[in-house]
Length: 224
Ligand code: CA
Image (tube, rainbow, N blue to C red; front, side, top):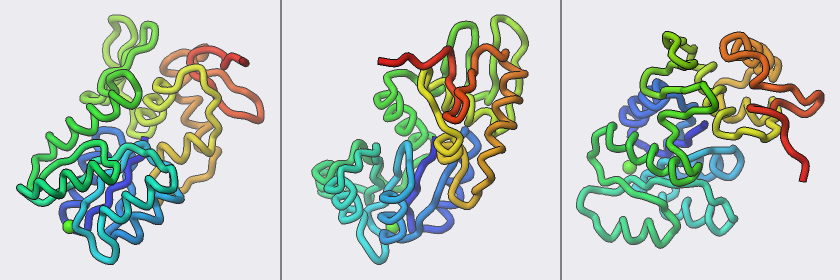
């Protein structure tokens, strides 16, 4: 899952980026509204964190443009402390949630998890499929009662994305877009390498290959 963070405070955005990466997200940062608007229109994100007070283009204008263009990505807006009218304006413009500054990162993380739970219809912090369980907090995988298996950051992101989309054909390009940020643009063959590593850890049968199309987690995709 890839998050877009539009925040002009360089220190804040750097610390948020590293914390969000630690818990398994790929993060792109935009330091002004224009760049943020562009990325939101051209890249694929699971969620956006959007500051309202931004240079070049205000956050509200960015959000309005996205919504008018039919971009329905879940958005959490960051508002100035006690500025109740910013919250109202944010919701009117199409925000899904807000957080007043300053905030504790734990609260932002909790709001991201809650919003994604609403979006996916299940908790993303602890996913399970058959006898497989994936823990965000521990970045580990559990099979039955066996000891936890530690995953690398990329393995965790990839497995979480697969588990959130069972039965869907996912192309290598699609998986790359959701696992790496914009500064890391590896060859799509790395997905093949990571898929094979995951197969060794969770069992071959759980990820099938659709030749020329992509991968399906948890059994074959059904045709309508
Ligand atoms: Ca700001």
